[in-house]
Length: 61
Image 1 (tube, rainbow, N blue to C red):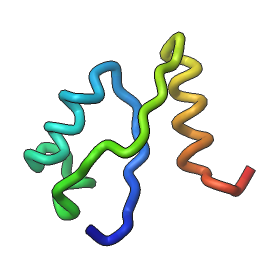
Image 2: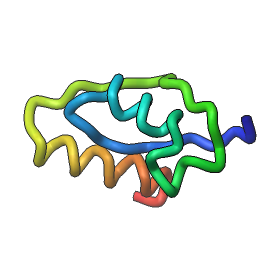
Image 3: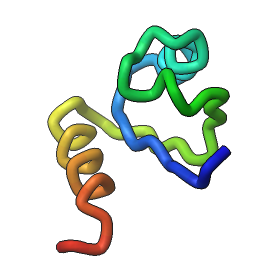
């Protein structure tokens, strides 16, 4: 592992993690294996996408 954190959103985090570890995502296939270190549940998809965008921005608010 190289210290990279992937931030993404999905309605099924277990299945998505499996896809990343099976190399089915081009962006993440070169840095396997992935493990889930943090998970947030959001009440709806709009808030989920807003939160994902904020996480990807990092400290650049």
